[in-house]
Amino acid sequence: MNVPQIVAMKDKEKISMLTAYDYTSARIADEAGIDIILVGDSLGMVMQGKTSTIPVTVDEMIYHAKMVKQGTKNALIVVDMPFMSYQADYVEAVRNAGRIMKETGCDAVKLEGGREFAVTINAIVSAGIPVMGHLGLTPQSINIFGSYKARGKNEKEAKKIIEDAKYIQEAGVFSIVLESVPKNLAKKVTQSVSVPTIGIGAGVHTDGQVLVFHDMLGLFDDFKPKFVKRYAHLKKEAVEAVKTYTKEVKEESFPTDEHSYE
Image (cartoon, rainbow, N blue to C red; front, side, top):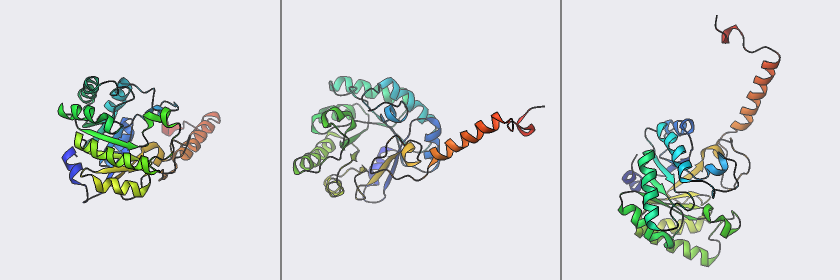
């Protein structure tokens, strides 16, 4: 899968995307036929147990993206640019995006924000690096928003999201994630741009959907956003399995001769 193929899927075929952070999860997603794997800065919460994405560093994103690359044969790999890796100025942004691409072998980077980052997006794309945009609820701005509530529910916010989508499309993004926005607004944005939109909590009218691997499999349950559908409950099964293992170890029913060398 490559960027032109993803762009060509708009209005023809829905795009499936999952966020994954390591070799094993990437391999599972890739074997299942996922179109895009996002190495998200949400690893700060899912993998590191932090309360937001803010502390995640470029080095940490590179570390996880390298593992994802090892487990992926077919899917397009996109890596989040973490907080303050692109906000200061576009020159630093290009350098960080280039480093992520060179050191991980990924196919594209993703950054949050609208009109205010159009120059930055254009500079990164001009350097030969594909960029995925991200509008609506942008987690790196949580300290401004004050909560993870849906965005674009009033007329002013909705208008800005539509305008921002057009600005970042003009700047060169090949797709746009729409997070936690009303489904009718997501539909308007999708119809307003020629690049694919990928929704998370944005309804069915976007060009694709994204969820976090650990969320949709029920492995991470510290909290459950409204937009998450559990396709499995693997944490519960894992806890029961570990309980059984612990019990067998203590009662000496494991290991048996089957699991021992002569």
